[in-house]
Length: 314
Ligand SMILES: NC(=O)c1ccc[n+]([C@@H]2O[C@H](COP(=O)([O-])OP(=O)(O)OC[C@H]3O[C@@H](n4cnc5c(N)ncnc54)[C@H](OP(=O)(O)O)[C@@H]3O)[C@@H](O)[C@H]2O)c1
Image (cartoon, rainbow, N blue to C red; front, side, top):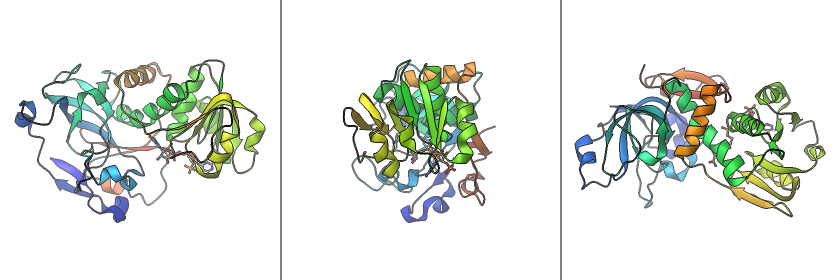
């Protein structure tokens, strides 16, 4: 099969190479003796890659700390199940699925990927594979930050940093739809985009004073650093600062600070798919490229806004 691999951590996306790799060994996978309990093979139709994935240790080593290069990056997938191993539940051969694959295993920039079934959810027939792959990472991150870690409820307020960005725009839409008052932040040029996604107020971080928004029940931080530190002071007693930018440097005086790394979740993926179908959740796809053109797509000569999705099969 065709796959994109990386071998050199220092090279970044410029070190991506398109190669031939063996397809997953379905016969071995289906046998009981393999270590593939719960795995399925997915024929990849669309794949997504996260910008800073090549900086994460999990791209280079497995769970036992062993070098796993050449590794296949990309962990967002939408495709079709072609084989099941022993112990899989809830999926069948031929089923359309989408999900987030394990950070420490070969990923989805390939024609096939082996994934634990529990990391996948059914993808409804009327949701395009490209759209499905584009909402996995951003949708799950937003969902988990708001509801699982942030415990936000209708009538409360959230300050969403980077509200026009990939994660922030999802968080803004999901929060607003849940009856939460949403204040978005970002650059001056993002104001209208953030409002279009559903933010009721917008803070231009370069020119407005963030502290003027007063207290909020939840801060959803994607920046860390100085913005993250100052944000802790905005959290109301009993509220939460949730961040995806690493360990928080400050904690709210009367509240919690939680940092997390997104994980796949079948039930949450299904909630996300439902909202995409209903038109309640919009995704921002910047460009769609083939696997043959993927290396160029991840090394653009000009700035592209929105998610890059690799359409592996037409
Ligand atoms: N822990 C996890 O599980 C997890 C999961 C997903 C993402 N993340 C992390 O979350 C971060 C955000 O991801 P993303 O995909 O949403 O990124 P993104 O699409 O680039 O969104 C960030 C947004 O914030 C804006 N921005 C950046 N720096 C700014 C500044 N100094 N002042 C004002 N606005 C600024 C960006 O504007 P411009 O485009 O103009 O720069 C963009 O609109 C990344 O670091 C990513 O690695 C973590």
